[in-house]
Figure (cartoon, rainbow, N blue to C red):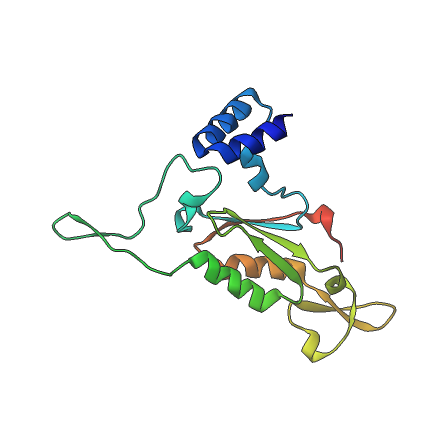
Length: 182
């Protein structure tokens, strides 16, 4: 019944749909924003970003209480001059670096509309011991298994690389160790 009313109201006018959403969210029955918040408990690693470095931070589902001034240049006359920076997104650059360097070990997920977290999901096959080859050493370490040299992911070094690559952008890296094993 409520869903039918929602669909009908949505088609009638944007004002009435906003009114219905506000009523439903104020009563605690429904929150439209919940649909756009992904659950983070399914990911293996969470990379928390510094909100002051996210250019699209104001586009997030939960608007921040405080906005940061970006693109303001201070002049010697103490007059602020707006200096727009076009088509530069440090989060997207960082995300591309992560995907280029670690795409064989993990998948990376990010909400480009103001997300504050990059979620990492380890690829299950990447944690299978690989035979020792020099070409297999990217992000891996050598260990012995049944008196045989094998390569396994060096998770501690990879997590440190996440922080080093995102210096100034990354606030913290949260490893959820209960979700993966070597």
